[in-house]
Image (tube, rainbow, N blue to C red; front, side):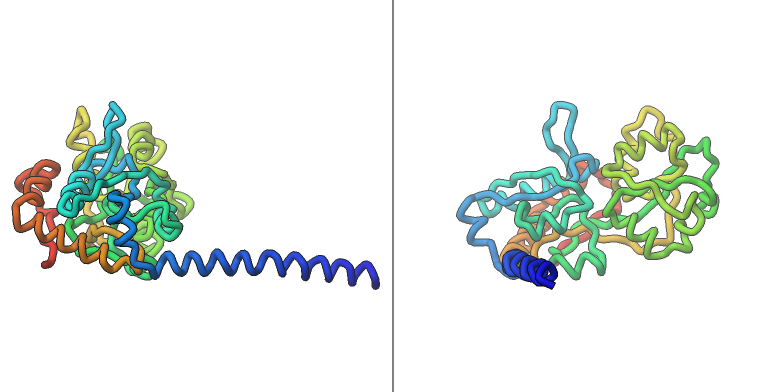
Length: 283
């Protein structure tokens, strides 16, 4: 009986130490999600943007290690209007909203698709780019439709909207593919390596990435792109729900760049003059 009492007292003591700490962490997280940090960002003169640095053409590392890409150019142009520098920080894409909540980054700006699930945890800017999910395969696989993926291995990026589409509508691909489970990748570069080596036979991927990647391959005709029935997507900037001023600044900046022609120049630089991916920002 005495031993049991000692154990109970020990457990109670541990709980008294741990629970307040957990409560404090939870409160700190809640404060971070409801606080407007524009004054802090303006004072330090830098905004921190989280990205997957292998996502061409949105944000990626060139061979010399320099960051380049559509969203790199766009983020810098927006914050140049406010005399604020942009610090780009590579993150594990599957942990993007966690990084945002923990304040290791201020923004998720890297081909970030607006979804109902994400709207629950982050605030979005106005959309600035259109996108869709496409199935990419090697022509030698003779995959001419999504139905031809039956029994085949499918690759998707962890935490991507494509991965969410596979789970959300299992009848389209998930129930057909091998083991009814896609192969998860941290980045699309590794996924394309496996596709080219026939370790996977199909890759569900953003059309903006697929088009850019295939265009720059030695033999673009070796690949086939198939449009899927998944919902059309919109790219926007993700931020904490409390950052209402930051959201207003970004929305205004996107509209200014649209009006003065800068957005058009960035679009043509990365997608060409005939691209239909551009979404007009609201005023």
